[in-house]
Length: 104
Image (cartoon, rainbow, N blue to C red; front, side, top):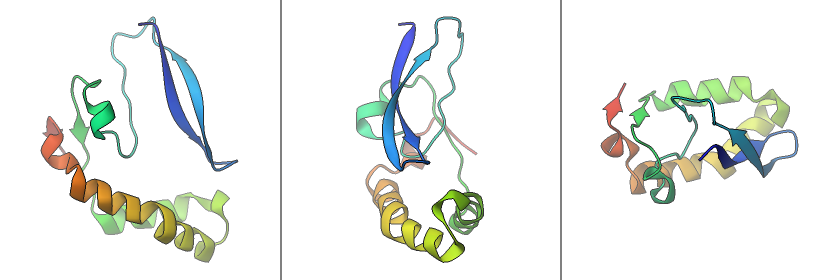
């Protein structure tokens, strides 16, 4: 396999778009992101490292980082409505710490 077709979040348009990534010259491919240990993807990874970052730190980072979403109140509301409920389900149902080869 020399190309991967991956879903990528395009924040400027708030959509998921497919991206073709050429890995023909890669010895190692590092994939980072959220929800990566979903059952339909986990078998594609040879080794998984889970970064165990406290919730408070994660929340502060995204709210300070994602200024493209609008003012602080708008960012907070979007995360409360859209992302954080999904994160809670993922942590409960997938338990990515348990499924990782290494936890840092």
